[in-house]
Amino acid sequence: MTQEKIVAIADSVTVGELAETLNLPVTTLVGELFKNGIVATINQRLDFDTATIVVEELGLDVKLEKKKTEAHERKTHQLTDRAISRPPIVAVMGHVDHGKTSLLDAILDKKTVDDEAGGITQHISAYQAERKGRMITLLDTPGHEAFAALRQHGAVLTDVVIIVVAADDGVKPQTVEAIRFARTANAKIVVAINKMDKEAANPEMVKAQLASEHGLNPEEWGGDTVMVEVSAKTGKNIDKLLDMVLLVADMEDLRADIDTPAEGLVIEAHMETGRGAVVGLLVEHGKLTPGQYLVAGQSYGRVRTMHDFKGSPLKQAGPATPIGVTGFK
Image 1 (cartoon, rainbow, N blue to C red):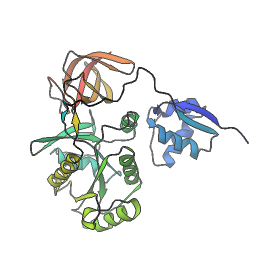
Image 2 (image 1 turned 60 degrees about the vertical axis):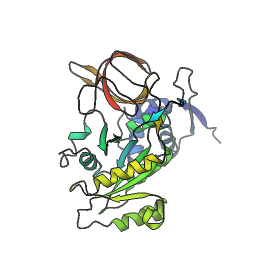
Image 3 (image 1 turned 90 degrees about the vertical axis):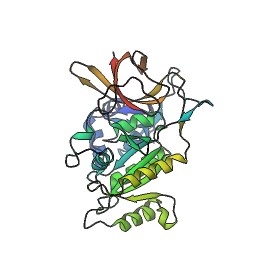
Image 4 (image 1 turned 180 degrees about the vertical axis):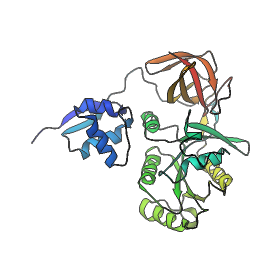
């Protein structure tokens, strides 16, 4: 019997890096991911769990192990007794064509519901909405990349996951994937049953699927999962959905330190002509201001400019605030 080879990889690895480590053609990995409903490129990041599943399904005599944490890696922040309440950080996930982007647009009162390819999906994929004087931070999930990065840090920044399910289509593979992610991240789940404006809408069918197949029992059936029937197209129950998110988040007593050096996560980065690297950050603790120095992995820099998701300049950013910064080397 062939002895299993043990290979150590990081918590997050690109498809190209994994292929090189396993001495496999990139196309082999991409094909296997595609069979599992994941459309990936060579630079797509995979979390450790996904990489392990792919290796198993390829039938390789390889066992993946996580690399030991290096001394320079950031330690988990310990809250002080001066910690203050912070906005909830909410991931919005759902199967393709179930209206996730349209729902985000409706929440942000944007007018791009007919353009899934544009509008909200560009630039920083993190936003903020206000409800009754309180902020809610929303993370868009265009794919696995951002969430592989979040998982690398224990996904501690995801408090609530809104799972969008079309009332006329029901539970699909990416719905199941979203449920799995929420449970892995130990985040609370709120289900948005979307497209209630459709004639074929059948919310009871969706609830039955979620309850019988995935253990998500709606509150009205005696369960503990909040489910809200909404329509991104008409705006039906959007405010109710936000109220429910805040209610669920309040039960978690979310707090962060403000009087501490700024810490956070890099969500994404891209190059812009005339501005250089624009890095999307989510502040976790502390207060970030222009002029401060930042270190992210092997990259560093001094914050030259800061802006919110709308592109408006910022003078400071506190916990749970998504921002774009320039100044990285």
